[in-house]
Length: 74
Image 1 (tube, rainbow, N blue to C red):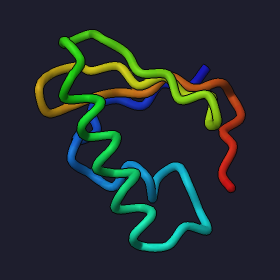
Image 2 (spheres, rainbow, N blue to C red; image 1 turned 90 degrees about the vertical axis):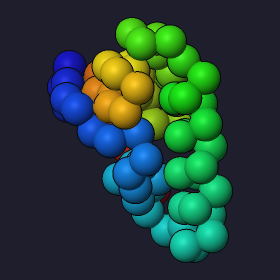
Image 3 (tube, one colour; image 1 turned 45 degrees about the vertical axis):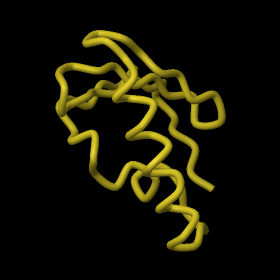
Image 4 (cartoon, rainbow, N blue to C red; image 1 turned 180 degrees about the vertical axis):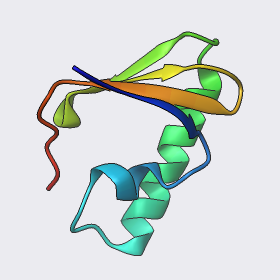
């Protein structure tokens, strides 16, 4: 397992995890992720199955990820 700590919730989440999308698709994905993370309590988690990654809310502004050794980018 790989853990990445303390990324900004309002960052470029989609660009970090997906390739081959348009700017508009990344914008929509980033807004979705930010909205989902904002609804979680601190230490709550969001699992995204198509990239096999769990995102854990560390604070109101930061999160970290837990992924298997292989990460899929399409």
